[in-house]
Length: 138
Image (cartoon, rainbow, N blue to C red; front, side, top):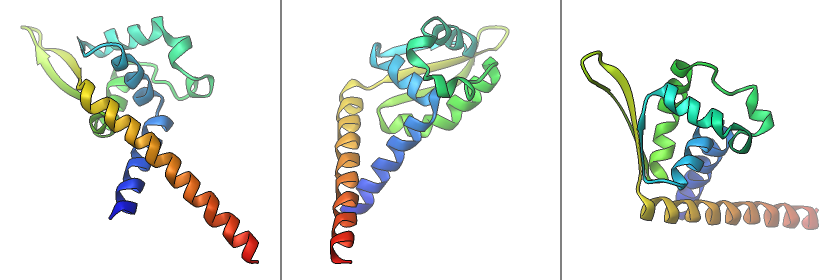
């Protein structure tokens, strides 16, 4: 059961690290506890800070429109929730403007992220030791 939990945490960590949108949202929410706005607002916020938040390799994969950005955010929301970042989508106002609300649970996000990183390091260490023992026994 411990191995399952460690593998699950490592998979979540890898999913967030491999998705430039999820990694960017994680960095933004590390600085604040709540953010509310439209996908355009969030895309603009990231654009203002783009060079420091987006890796050069991820620039090709970066969403070009607010609609595609919101879609990527919807797909990443399950993984981000495990880090304590709750994302909700709704409509507001007479015109029904689409609003994104992100809220970070500081206590949960830090402990979960630290646990994921520690477990990921333990898994990598275990894999390396298994490889060494397999090579030495050959």
